[in-house]
Length: 251
Image (cartoon, rainbow, N blue to C red; front, top):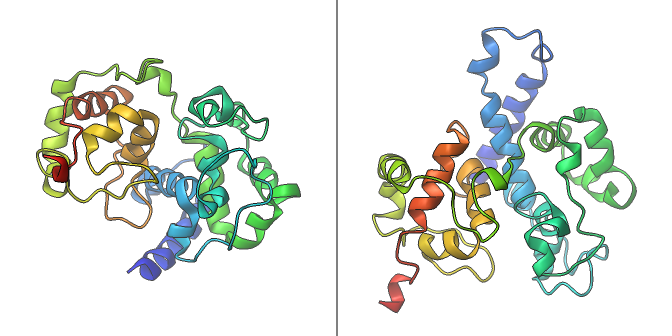
């Protein structure tokens, strides 16, 4: 299934690349799904190896700061250096290590895709230029240019969601409950250290939760809710923060 998804992704991105540039849009623009393309870029940012269905290189990325204690395979992921909030050491990653390697990507929002692609396919990032097919490079660059969200609009510095949990409850029950169940403790594709309860992730790793709510989870059949407004996304996070954070096995 993952190999089929990879092939479909390349075909669809190639089709999108053939569309007129922004400002010369047609009715076809929407039917080919630019929000889908943004969410694919978000998945590549999260874990390109899962999207490509290939294993990451063995061992630790030599470019990754030695003082940051994370699993070796994760050191090859974009999110490991730039964070779930895209702010590098200006955001939540500072808690892990205040390293100059953890660069904020907020300043490249709106930058032309070709310039962004050059940044992550040359120099110390040249390895990724060899791994990522051109259509995938386009998707990742499109996400970095147009798909980053501002976490401060959806959560406070403490991690508390700014949204209305009643709005989030309605959306959760309409789109999420069939997989995650009413208590949010089913079918969770977690990160290292996560506990299998959406209530726990939303409380303790809200930046991660926001990224995955908007873009979906690489290698998993999870909806991308990028079509919702920031207010609605914040509402989902607020509702998840009301759920019991204890995994089912702890009850």
